[in-house]
Length: 284
Image 1 (spheres, rainbow, N blue to C red):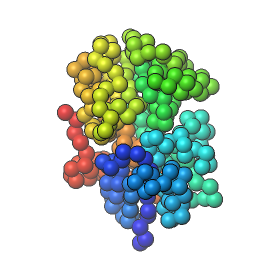
Image 2: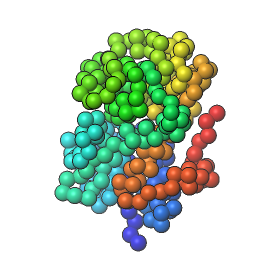
Image 3: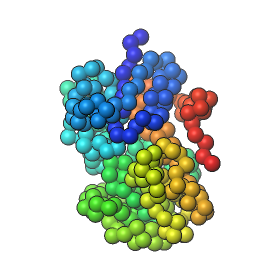
């Protein structure tokens, strides 16, 4: 059987576990998967040239990560109306005249939240920092989960305002505002969400200081390299239940694998296989 060629385009992805997840999923499904890390700067290419390289070399599909999830959208047909409203894609399948874009960050967050906190638990009032590609998907997912309110803060205020405007056009009973400061975003909220790269390897720090965590009951960090970020450590110390970025990584990966191969990998078997290979990090 010829290998199914997949890849990941992004910056700062040298430690990404995506190759391992997709190869293990392929093994469990009897498929031969190859999966490449594609860093445009290392290839001496810009994003569009790196994307074209994947097309020309016969890739079946690619994942797209920071900072290209919005950049890729004009190159794609987006068949799902919800994904089109999100305006960002993390999964691309080359199976038609024009590549198809999907967003498994959206579906993956919904599944991860319910699995971690329980299907009956709602997000309540939420503060989210970061309105880029992953932030857009998670904001829509928070709405799908039935949040009462979402306050969005981004250092680029226009990005937060655009995301709030996009959410206002969706039929959800969630109040949405673009917050002017971290303090205004986090005052009295139930949930804290980091959708910035702060805390990732190479981007040290925390996007939300401990002083803004006092009343929150749960926290999520989209960063998963490392899994135990400073932000999540502070949230634990403040008494929050936490969900790491690994859970989003895991569930979005299963969704992406389905788009790439039309196979449904068993989640429990994949989690066990990644753990046995030392690739799943258990939270402290």
